[in-house]
Image 1 (cartoon, rainbow, N blue to C red):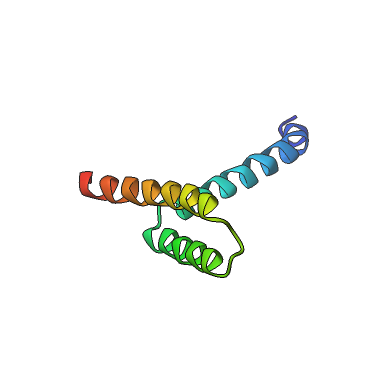
Image 2 (cartoon, one colour; image 1 turned 90 degrees about the vertical axis):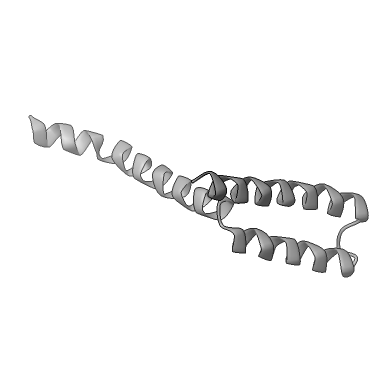
Length: 78
């Protein structure tokens, strides 16, 4: 009986495993100062190369700076 349950639940367990891995990657990506700084530099380069306008640059920069501030605040609270 347990073998049948394991077989039937395998696809669900696989989906849960993948979702957890994706969540881990997202958490790492959004909590790493170096990653945020790289994204800021890439954003600045796009702006300087006229790939994005000033409004889009300001919007994305504000989001990244807020994220960076939150990361630093969390580190100080630990």
